[in-house]
Image 1: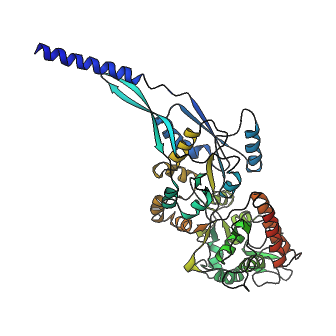
Image 2: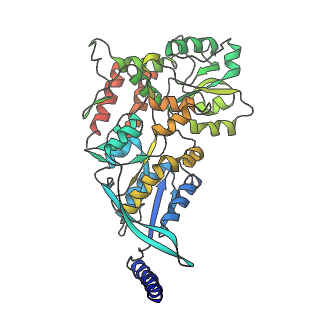
Image 3: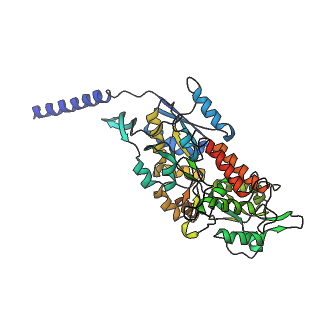
Length: 452
């Protein structure tokens, strides 16, 4: 018995020594600070995911900084130009900027990431911190294809690599004034653009001098409609327009099924008709105020925007009786919606690639991203969460549209592409060019900066 007891004591002492020695063989990682830059997200949107990540990786400090859109791109590029870099490790960009940034400013997702995990464990009668370095496989292209909505695949994957991850998405929706529809004896908002044109004609009130006394919809112009280019693009996509083909901008080209039909021209004509006094659908012009403000005042029946703009409408209106409906369609049996969203990616100049990409993948997980979606008022890009949102009366409309959302690559000068869309619209409305001339000019200018 004495021999057995001595043996047990030796084993216990040996085990304790082994634990102490073993725990000392894993070096504590050096502190890592990750800086995240964004434009629309608030610090509060990231609080829960940052707190959860730091519990497992307390050596990583994460700081989010919100920048002004007007100066954002210049801040990014100038920050990375500094030596040492003063730019962010992780940053947000519009989905249409990924291809432009991927060569010079993005570190694509590596096949795996190696980070240190901290775990509190009990050793005899005391608690100790255990540190383990774990290498985990990253998301794959197949994961993106299977788990995310379709539009994400085309926006973040190039040359077989993943360059960015979205946390949420917004799609164009139709806000409508219920009181104005009631006055026009309309029980439901229109589902198709043909129905929409008829409805606008019933709601709009225009005097003999073409002054708009009551506006049916904010369509037809550019400067006073913040989503003008998105609306025109959606009309083109719904009408069967190929925005780009390979490295060529092609929204001025005829239909692949009928060479005599130009779907892009027809979409532009439909849009600009709403700002032309000689047209039956005339309901808006360049002298009107900003569309969102006019809607908030109760003087506009239909406003096209994004879910996040609802807070602006509510803050500017007083008891406005409004609702949100799906975007009208050219063909309801072939539903197409428009996605306008931002993605997060990792800077080429970061010194902490593993931690940066590990955090982004962590933040994008279904069980982690929900608080962010609620705080930022966005729809999920993950199919698993969309199934839940489809069953939620407050989210189902946005979830349905996300599944059929599309976008297009604006080239290496996306801001200029936006400007050229505006010029195209204004040339038609101001009668300085006809439809064909205006759209041809826009394509030519966007093409010049498309693949530089």
